[in-house]
Structures are given as C-alpha cells and as structure tokens.
Image (tube, rainbow, N blue to C red; front, side, top):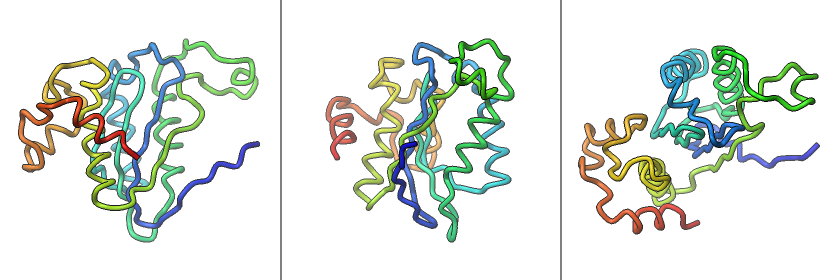
Length: 177
C-alpha cells in the first residue's frame, strides 16, 4: 500500500482538489444542495473555516483553515465524501473491488492537498479557486459561476465584481509553484 506523505499542521490552511471518478459527470452541480448540506453538517461536527471554495460539475477546489490544535482534514474529507455518497441514489459504475468492498463509485479514491506556506501562496490559491470556472470554460466571467465563494469575496471587498479582466495572467499566476 502506498505511503502518502501529508503535511499535518495544527490550525493550518490547506488547498484541496477533490474529484469525481467519472470526469464527464455533472453530479456535483446537479446535487449542489445535497453537497452543501453535507458540508454544513460536517462543519458542525468537525469545525473548519472555508476561506474559498468552488464546485464545478466533476471536481471542486477549496481552501480551509483548521482550528488551532487540529490537523485532521482527512476525517473531514471522509465524512464529506461518504455523507454525500450515501445521499445520492446508486447507479454509478463500480469496479469489482468496489463491489466486493461495498463501496460506491462516485469519488476518486484520494484527493490533492497542499499546505499553504505564506501570504503569496494563499493569494495564488485563493485566486486559482475563483478563476477555475473560467479556466475550464464553464463561464466567461467569474461572477457568472454560482457555485463559488467569489460572491462572498466581492461582498467582503476582496474582489470587485469584474475581477479577472486579464484571465490568462491570473490563471498563469495561480499555477506557478
């Protein structure tokens, strides 16, 4: 079994990418209300702060800040992914291994996680999250994607409603590592 190296920092801020197994699916936006309810319930039982989040049809990106003394993002993702899967009618294709284990075939088994290092790293990931619907061609203006914390960021004065005028510049800046 692989030994995945994770950065466990109590109270840390993390960027995540979580993806559906079927990359052609639109399940996440089709079932956005169920996903939101599962996330809200998870936050009640396992608190964390949502700094930024975007839900696309088949994947999502988010920035979370965990509470002081807590580094357990893995439990939160397990609860979100399993809670969402339990609320979705069965019907997806499953591998033989998934069938034997009684697992659903909704999510990719793992997720991408990145510990935010500094303010610049935070800003790049924050911007990347919000520009993502444009990057993937779902909309031509960030403000037009409804499943994003972009609108909350505008209300807080972090962005203007017409943010991301030079889309290529913003996407390239966010992808630098």
